[in-house]
Image (cartoon, rainbow over all chains, first blue to last red; front, side, top):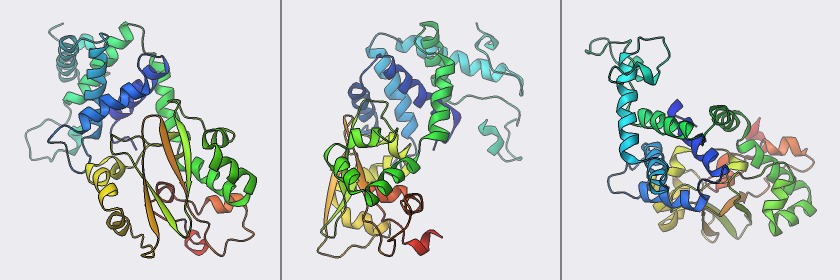
Length: 99
Length: 212
């Protein structure tokens, strides 16, 4: 059902935020619909969770909760942290050499 | 983690940690939301676990089997599916309403979400990949008979196919026809005949011999 762990986390975060009243499910469906209808999406639906994460980012951006620039900065920071973390050890944000 | 799939002859190191853009984005969103106190990691884990282990098409199969054996329940399910389903302990997390659509000799029901991927999670769990794919989302409406054919469902030419388009507020559960030769079977045994696809409409309930 969840092809990779991050897809499960993205899904659960969305359900959790909705339960906490951060957005309505209709708002969520609209955000997701916008993403899945973008031109160039995979015919087989294999990029479905990419759409999901883009939709969540966009909705949180629109709500003023997570600024797009800030998220992108953190995204790169996590990528640097992952690269700098030896295999077998937990990846933590503070492992980013540029932090 | 994807590194394990690389071949030995390429130039990637097997033990590199690498986050894909999407993986890192999820981490980034989680970081922001945790800092703001909007997500609780324990709650996130609990939700994942629920959907991975507790919620699935067995829930819907129980609803269908009960409707097959209990005419009073079937009538309730037809009239107020949200309440009838909730009475078995299956409630939607999104506050969505449920509607049960019953297959008959005259009408076969097929569920799609053309908008995105709305799906009756509480009774069917998470949707299969094909349900979310653009091919199914568009063709189910334009050519339902062709889609059913691909799923191996061949209906008599005079059977009408009704396509139900789900929304964020309203989700559909197809109640397939009870197969013949199942008289006297228990509710639990009947539930084994009810497949996920039969509750989406891309399948039929199994014949008793096929389920064994």
